[in-house]
Image (cartoon, rainbow, N blue to C red; front, side, top):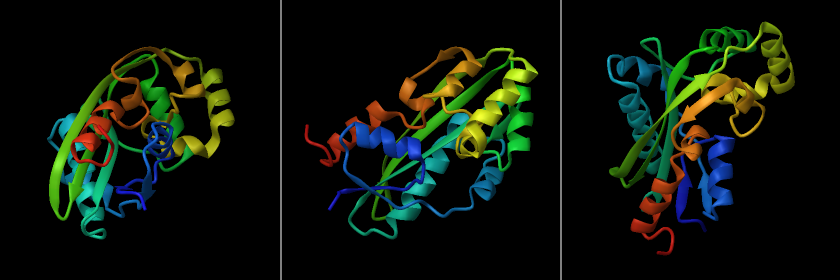
Length: 196
């Protein structure tokens, strides 16, 4: 049995952990993220992402006594707002039009918890500069990616076709994909989940 519980349904987070050789069981947190984000209005984007990751880890840890739980979240800060996932392709189109030619802050955060105690947390900010793309490029992108992009904050899978949306990225590659992987691996070694 895996020592680690991943409190996320994110395909990207699962893929990153699997590729790094980390055994885990996924048990997604069933929290009201929109309600949490509303209560965190006024906080900076880094704090919002970190609090969401911590809340997920603590929530799922209550279901798994004695087990270490990894929570994760990604939030975009843009134009004084905190953005999460879009619910529809129409909303994705509107968001990507707004982000085109602009720089936004993407923060991916992770937290470890066990038995109601927060053991560790970290937020990793990345500055993401989208190129000014044409309306036709946007329509082709949405047609090619389809509803799958609704699973990602910002509506892009940077590890795939979404890379074409960008001119520049300043930050950790793994964090762009949704998890500050190297700090997570170090924290898992400190908790004896991974060998040192």
